[in-house]
Length: 172
Image 1 (cartoon, one colour):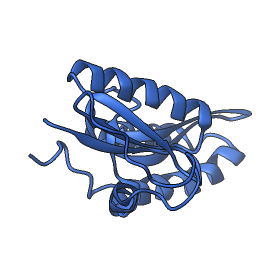
Image 2: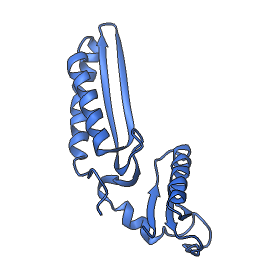
Image 3: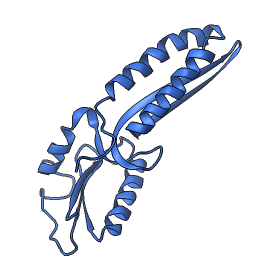
Image 4: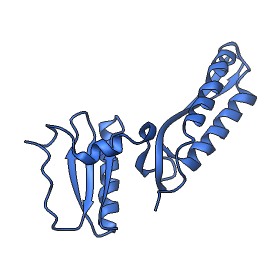
């Protein structure tokens, strides 16, 4: 592989920095240098290139001016699907920002859980079934839990259906 491009934009600056260090390690393992361009609306455009490749100039100063052409191409990916690692299993695969919720009702208490992040197709399926089945069988035992489950299950189903376009592997 001679080079690759990636947009890092999780919405959380600390997470963006963590993902940037992961991208740096991945580029180094491939013998590539990482060029980083801050994006005006947050996040980074990263390009892994052979060492010694000159840094492309995109504007008067980092973070100002229009984003590079590669940013437009990747931000147009279907429903924010990105080229990166899964935040749940760390597998390098196409990911999508999803959120699944689960609820266990205990008559006077409830135990809610939520997973939110860039997940690969395998983890999307795993957490959808785990969280939705837990809520389906254990989420009704309490007044608040009953109504919470009525909302959570359809939301999980909608998220799962919306993530059907995530391929299991990157196209070759």
